[in-house]
Amino acid sequence: MELNTIALSDFTKLATVIFEKNRASLPLEARSSGMFQVTPIPQGTGNTREFTEIDLEEYASHKGQSDQATRASVQQGYSKTMTAKRIAKDIGISYEMRTQNKYPEVVRRLTNLSALAVNRMELDLQHQITFAASTSYSDMDGNTVATTMGDGFQLAYTAHTLAGSSTTYRNRLAGNGRLSKGTLEGMERLAVEETYNHLGEKVVVPFDILWTTDDPNTVNTAREYLKSVGDLTAAHSGVTNVYKGKYKHVVLSRVATTAAGAVDTDKRYYWGLASSMKSTAHLGVWEEPHLKTPSDLNAGEEFSTDDWNYGVHCGYGIVIVDGSWFKFSSGDGAA
Image 1 (tube, rainbow, N blue to C red):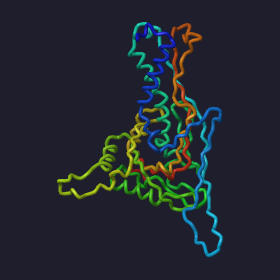
Image 2: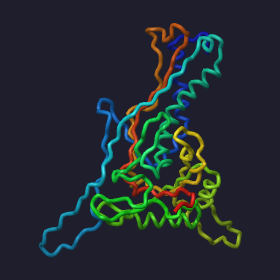
Image 3: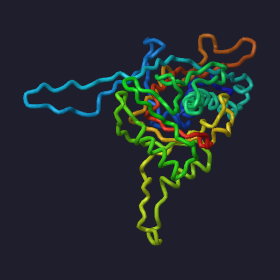
Image 4: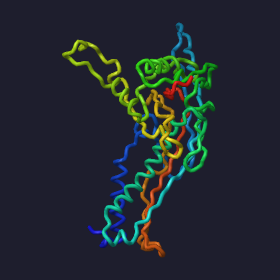
């Protein structure tokens, strides 16, 4: 179908197909990682959502003959309120593109449009980790984004507090070493010894995600640890890789960026562990990225330019309630 024969309604159908097809092909590194709990939020239910934690004590108590069983202790943890925000971008499809069969240019514009909202959502999700050592940052639009947990501290911190205990815990690796066998075992020790419920009891939770930036050395090191196997004919054929299948490796290619999305080499060695089971990181989706199209009623055409305008719109919110599910190293050797 040539562009110079397409009416507005036909072109809009074509634009929607191109938009949806490209959106489905875009990588959702953070959203699909298991690190964020995704909650669709219906229309007409307000622009905020509160997320909270409820912990039950870990162990039952002795019950004597004919004695009444003791009540289990329940402790409410911290809460965080998520507020929706909307993002959008518009493009114009010019008269010349429609009438001179510039199909590649039209397709490129529409595929770029679909990427804009998906990429921005990914950037905002991954910047929760980019700025994990800060309590806030200023995003590319100049808006202040709070990155505090329910205890008032940043995501990666050395003395997080608990709601029902004086115990504190750290989820930032001492020494902040780069990914290696030694630092990975140190990170696993954090998972074992520094993961509590809000009553101050140690909880045993599987940390099933090893996340890294897209730094090639860090990625390759992670893959070597997780996937290497011994040659059956070699002298070490009986050696078992203790890390094989232990973690899902998640590569977050937008973590080592500035607030504007440019490369930030200071963050290239960020890495850590996460638990998809215990995660309190939430993405609430009010509007999935969708295409806004011009109307047939007004020909969908700007009077002065002859452009047909199409736009992408999306609405979502992000909060993280606490940091016990997340372990972090900046990889820069900082104390």
